[in-house]
Structure formats: structure tokens, C-alpha cells
Image 1 (cartoon, helix red, strand yellow):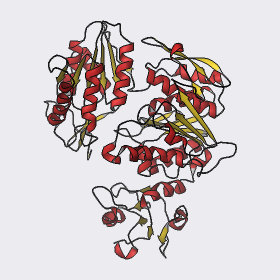
Image 2 (cartoon, one colour; image 1 turned 60 degrees about the horizontal axis):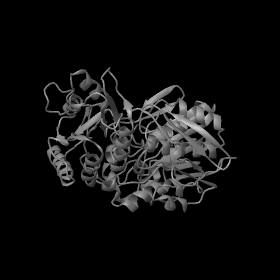
Image 3 (cartoon, helix red, strand yellow; image 1 turned 45 degrees about the horizontal axis):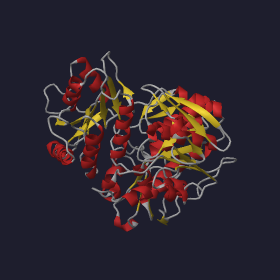
Image 4 (cartoon, helix red, strand yellow; image 1 turned 135 degrees about the vertical axis):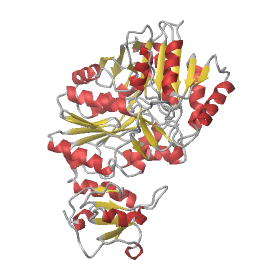
Amino acid sequence: MRFSELLRALDDVIAAPSADAEISAPVSEDNRTIKAGGVFVARKGGSADGHDLIPSAVERGAAAVIGTRPPDQVDCAVPYAQVGNALLATGRVAAAYHGYPSRQLVVIGVTGTDGKTTTSNLIFSILKAAGIRTGMISTVSAVIGDEELPTGLHVTTPGADEIQGYLRRMVEAGLTHCILETTSHGLAQGRVNGVDYDVAVITNVTHEHLDFHGSFENYRAAKGLLFAGLVGSYHKPNVPKIAVINRDDPSAGYFSQFPADQQLTYSTRTRAAVSTSDETLEFTPTVTRFIVKTDQHSFPIRSALVGRFNVENTLAAVAAALGLGIDVTAIQRGVESLAGVPGRMERIDVGQNFIALVDFAHTPNALRRSLEAARLMLPVDKRVIAVFGSAGLRDREKRRLMAEVSNELADISVFTAEDPRTESLDAILKVMAEAAEAKGGAEGRTFYRIADRGAALAFACQLARQGDVVIACGKGHEQSMCFGTVEYPWDDREGLRAALLGHPLKTLPTAPGYNAPLVSGG
């Protein structure tokens, strides 16, 4: 493909080069990983300006460059195009390079603060139960036929070229549908530009990522980009543009303002296109049952996913499926066949006499929901013991809020490491301890500080009595923990399993015998 052909995907080219180039590799914003024959997109980031890295990208093989500086202000030895918005360029050029694969798939986008991965997996399971050849790109993995590929150390939407590459592989594998878990970072940073969505699903919008977005309004607006782009995107034959909105969420009105061919609401509290009610809800430690009601149907759902929040996630998936014309029996089979989602209320059992869970809850709202779900699994005289931390270089307000939630809902909280990055772990834990004390908590009785996460899990297991719940929150399925700028291997599931077996793993890099780092630059 020629560079000039790719530039046709952009509508804000200010200066196109007189020379052309053959493009034989994908687009990239990273000068360190650009492949020979690829297109380098130079844009100004938070810590570096990509325009200054053009010579390095060219040296590594970039065949052409896109940026926002005028051509006479860059040092570029290959064809260079100036555009108005480099943030928009990467996704659109990536889509063009891969032949616009999303136009050959029905794409369901799922966004929200909490519940994205579970809702994506529910929709995936329902579509499979309906006999539809479906792929999925989540923050856990990309599923293409029988192949499952990890999508990164930490939870976020993959880069633009990775997404388009996965979509192209799905088309080539004969798939017809794709569920794409879509984060606010992925939307705000243009990673999904060039994806033509057909269904947009919102789970909820609560306190999260304000360190990146600056305000709740900006954060919500980033989520809104998924809905705002529906009608203007490529229309596939006989595929309506569908918006699925949580009517119980305070931001429901905001998302309802975006036009769509069909708008479906869901609710556990009031009348909606898809709803349930408290009188039909039945929770046990292993099964959740409820009745789904629509204008045309009333049908029972049986699910292995525990907690009221998973009822909401299920309703979101049911609404999306109904909008796509999936029949009720396939919906029921799909929900029931999903035994669980990695790192989401996942049980760890080595024969202990109490319940041990790993959950990804890393926001105040998600922690509240997870602790409420854990409480539902217990007799009234048993205890919930929660182990969690709060990430460094991220939303600082969460540290206080998370501690307050756990002080309210857990019987015992153990504050520990959770990707402190370059911040002081002791300082993070001090903020959490002070927040718990301000709400009536007592250190050494209702909460503890144990910096090493492996030791914290072991301590929680030692405290647990028969019938209690120990729940490790914040890491879920993730495979690493960041100290300084280095990612070290860590899996909460393995950590909790080791703690239950009496030989806790180490997490602090200073601990003797700790594992070698995975990668620098975290």
C-alpha cells in the first residue's frame, strides 16, 4: 500500500508530501517498536514530543511519518505529512492499512467504570450459544476462534494497530461479530478511531481515572465518544446502530442524548426495556436467579455470577443480545454457560474451610459491590476480610474512598501494595489508614497495614475462621505489579493459593529471593 492511499483515510491533511512511499508494516506511535516499512505517527505526549523522535523512528525503518508540525520544522528523511490532529490519525490509518475490518463485522463496544469485562464475556457467551461466530477483544485477552492472546500486563484497551490487526484476523477466520471492551483511555487516546461500532453498551460511570481525565465530566465525555460515534460510523446492511444504557446510573440521561437507531435501557429498580425486580432476585453462594422482563418476554435467568452488580451486567448483555435479534433460549443458555470470568469474584479452593476470592475491584464503587456480594455468600455471624491497596501515580482520591468503603462493609481490612510505581508505598498506606481511622476504624483490630502483598494475603488467611470470606481486590487476573518503573511478576490468584497452602509469595522487590522483573518502563 502506498502512503498516499493511507492519507485518504484522514480528512485533516494540511500538507502532503510530494514524494510517496511503499508501506509494508503497520502504523505506530512508538519509535522503539516501529517496524521497517511502517508509518510513524508523531504527537506530543505527556512526557515527550514524538516529533523529536522522528529521526530515531526513521533509523529503525519507518517508511513515512505523520505529525502536526509544519514540514520545515521537522527532521525527517522520509515522506512526511502534516495533519491537524495526530491523535485521530493513528486509528484511522491503522484501519485503512488493515482494510477497514470492522466494516465486515458486527462490532459491540462495551464501556463503563466497572463491569466491562464481565459484560463483554456475557455477550460473547450469549452469541456463541446462538451459533454466531464471534470474537472478543477484552482487557484480559483477544479471542479469535480457538486462539486466545493476552492483551497486556495491565488493564486497558490495546493500541490502535493491535485492535485493527485483531479485527482483520477475525475477518480472515470467518467470524461475523466482535465484542470490543472499550476503556475511557482507549477512547480519549484515539486507539479505537477507525472502528465502526454497531452497538454501544454503558455499564456505569463512577469515580475513576480522574488523574488522567482531570474531572468527572471529562471522564464521562470520554465514555460518551463511543455513543457519539455510532450514527456517523459506517452503516452495515441490515445492522441497526444500538445504544444500551443503564437506566439506574446517574449518567443515563447524558448517554441518552446521543442519537441511535435503537435505544435500549436496562434496570434492576424501575421499568425499562429490559428489567428485573428485587422480588425475583435469589442469591446463593454459587447461583444467582432472577426474572427478566421486556415488553415481549418474561423469562428466568440462572447464573453462576454472584452479586447484584452481576445482575446489572447480565441485564446489559441481555439488552444488547435482544437488540441484535438473539432469541431468548440462546440468551438463557449463554448466561448459564458462563461459569466465571478470570479474576472476577474467582474462587480459590485448596480445601480450606472458608471462602477465598480474587476480584478486580479497584474503584470505590466496584469495591463496594464486591464486598456486598461477598456478604451475600455468608451467614450473618461470619466475617468478610478484604485485602487491597491503591495504585501509585493514579487517582489519589481513591485511596481515601477505598479505605472508607472497606471500613464500612468489611469486618477486617488489610491495606497492602498495589502497583505503587514511583510513589512511596508507606505514604499510600498511611493515607488509607488515616481514612479508615477517621471513619471509626482501629488499626490492629479492624484494619492492618502490611506492605508485602503476599504477606498480607497470608495474614488474612491466618485470621480467617470457618465460614468467613477472604477477598483479594484490585489486581484480578493481572500478571504483574509495578514498583518504581519496573513490572515484576505477580498474580493474585497464585498469591492467594500460595497463602492458603502456607508458603506465601513475595511481592516487594527488596524481598530475598524475589523473582526477576518482567519489563522496565512500567
